[in-house]
Structures are given as structure tokens and as C-alpha cells.
Length: 523
Image (cartoon, rainbow, N blue to C red; front, side, top):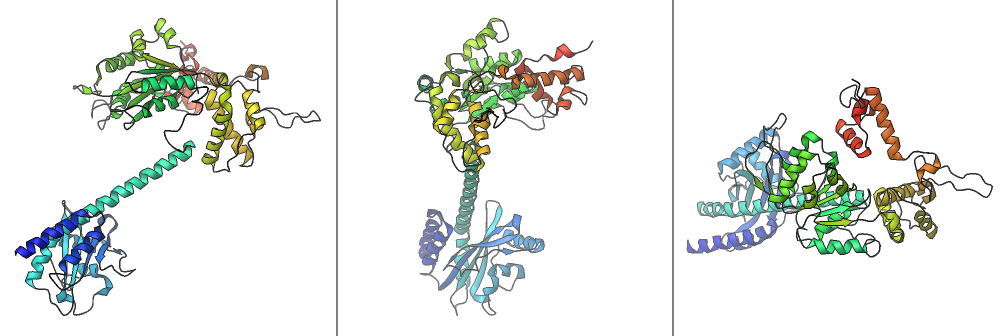
């Protein structure tokens, strides 16, 4: 008995010290060979959702082909699971369904030297152990007691192996998602180096380094497309919160009636349609950074509740009665003049003082022309990755042409132009001229290509081309739809339906473009 106790302790050690189950089984087989005339050990895993039984380990190793999985019918699987739950050890010939675990290798007369033992743990069927003795040995009652002692450690090893493979599958899926995201973004890494940090953004990055080590709220100011989200991510990844979440919220895209639910979450049943409890953006960003883009779009009542969170670090879900503490670093951004908005009452003055603890102003692209060569090369490389094209470097002539344009859309517009140029060039060249919509005159005086609609000529504002800017055209189109719907936004006869967009999206665009729907109401 003492000898068997020592062996069982060694079996447990082998079962738990190896990551791969085939390593554990090989060690256990060597241990058992000192006590019984063992021929082989084999473990199969049950995969109920696929009605599959697959050999996962054997000692000695199974020949190629015998380790393949075997499919069971629904009835066979039901009988197999019933045997596993009973936990009884049997020999071949007792149950034809269980015999299928042995595969085609079983021969007539081998039954007395083979046992099949279920492996069951953590409330579910895991698999089965098949043990064979060398002929002409017949398995005795003493052997069966020894096999029974093996069931628990081998079940633990099989469970660990299953969890290991599940984690590996999840890790592979997450990595595949990450690679797919980076490919769509045209990046090599999420926390990429900021292009221009040594030149046009040198002073900005000094301020980023200064504030990253603290939890002070940061306000990013700058025109649309200057890279405020990129700088916000840089602050996050250079801070102690880098391992926490980075959550971006566009305040201008949240419908007014859903702002509280989106930011602070809601309890199940707190309003019609609240079928489940939902965590708000503050809770999701707990331990990390919450980036509130277009903070100037928050309505006044939401500004009050947001101010309380900044002051107290507590939120209350919609329909909830208990305050919830959150540890969140807030970075806000806007292209508006919040100081002027606070002065004329369109933005709460106390909230302005709270979020503007450390303002950072991002310069427009027209003030950092020295960064254009590096930015153009970066966006050309990104376009090649995103569209599966051969990488093409911008030429000196391309860069010179890009430097003559005013870039009202800043870096976002530059990226779009390089994307368009790469697509037009089909991986052979960068068609910067066509992408900018510039008319290039031939030696005969004829235009080689016409300007692209809605794109300004290099060095000249859009007004001189006789075309309205894109934002003006969109605003006028929205006004036409509002005139037709008599100021109605929602419903089958509303402007949103006529334009084919969501009413909430339409309202956000109207706020951004300064279109007042009430001017079109009749009566």
C-alpha cells in the first residue's frame, strides 16, 4: 500500500507539472511500467458540440491515422455521455458505443487485458482513458484499483490541456483581429510613432511628455483633422495607465436622449428597451483613459453630470441608486473655441475650467509644411498596406506639389489624398496631380485631366474655382431636404428619410454645419 501511495504521488506530480498532456502521459506510463506489465495508455477527449471523440495523447504514440477524431451520431453520443457520468470502468464488449473509443485496432480476445475508464471533472464529461496490458496478462481487481486511482489526476491533466488550447485559440483569434485592424488602419503597431514629433509637433510632444506622468485632465485644441486622437493615444500609452483601456467617444454622435445611458450606463428595466444592465463609457474606461472627442457638442444637462464625475469620481447608472466609483483619466478634444462658448453661455464655465487644466494646441498642417515629406511617405506606405498595392515613395515633385496646397482638412485630408493617389496609380506611381484634382496643361495648351469635383486647386482656396466647399454643399443639400419636409427630421416624410441617413446622424451633421431646422418649420 505504501508503495502504491508513493506511485500515486508521483503520478499527480507528472499530471500537474507539464503543460502538454502528452508529456504528462508519457511520464505516467513510465511510472506504471515499474508496477504493472503495461503495454499502452491512451486518452481521448469528448467534444459534445461537434459529436466528436479525438485522441489527444498516447504512450507510446499512436500511429498516424489512429489519432484522428471519430464522429458519433446523436444517439451514440448520448449513450457515451451517460457512461461517462456513471463513472464505471468497463472492458471491451460490454457496450458497443464505448468500444468505438478503441477504434479498429481492437482484436477478438483482447478484452480481458483492456479497460476503458471515464474521465469526468468540473461538472462535465471530459474524455476517457484506455489502458492495455501486455499479453497474456489479464487485468485483475488489484489492477482495476490502480486504474481507478489514475482517473482523477488524468482528468485534471485533460482539463488543463483543454483550457490551454482554448486560451491558445482565443489568443490566436485576438492576434488575427489585431493584425486585421492594423492592416485596415495601415499601421505596423497600435502605439505607432507620431510622424512629425521631431519637427512640427516638437513643442506639442514636449507638453505630452510633461502631462503623461500625471492624471491631470487634458484638453486638445485644434482644427478638424489635426490628429487630436493620435495625440490622445500618445498621452495614454506614455502614462501609467498604458495597460488599461483607451476608450474614444464622439460626443457629437450621441443622440441627446441616449447620452446618460451611453456615458454612465443603465440598469436592467430602467426604461423601455433596457433588457439588460449596460456599462457606460466611464465604467468601461475604468483604470484607463476616456477620450471625449468634440466635447463642445455635449448638451448643457449632460455637462452638469459630467462635471460631477470629474469632481467626485463617482457615477450613477440610469435607474440605479448606488454611486459607483470610477478611476478614469479624461482627455477632451474640440475644434471649437470653448473659451468663447463659455463666455456667452453655450458651454458651462465651471466645466471649462475643470477640463482645461492642461490645454495642448495642435497646429494645422499649413503651419508644419516641413513635415509633409515624412507624412506623405507614411501615408503612401499605409495606403500600400491597406489596399494591397506595391509601395511607392512620393517623388520630390510630388512633395513640392503637396506643399503648395493649403490643406483645410489638415492631416486627415492629406491621408485621403495619398490613398486616392495610390489607388489611381495602381501600385506603379502616386497620381498626386489627379488626386488633388489639378489641371495639368500640356505643351499644346490642352488640359490633360480635369479637376476633381469639390477639390480645390493647389495654392488657391475653393472659392476661386467657382465651386462651393464640400461642407457648404452638404449644408445646402440638408437645407433643401428640410425645406421639402417643412422642418421635419424623423418619420417617413422627414428629411432623414429623404437623405437616406439615420435621424441622429443628420442632427449631428446639422449641429456641426450650423443648420437650424427650426427655420424651416411652418406654423
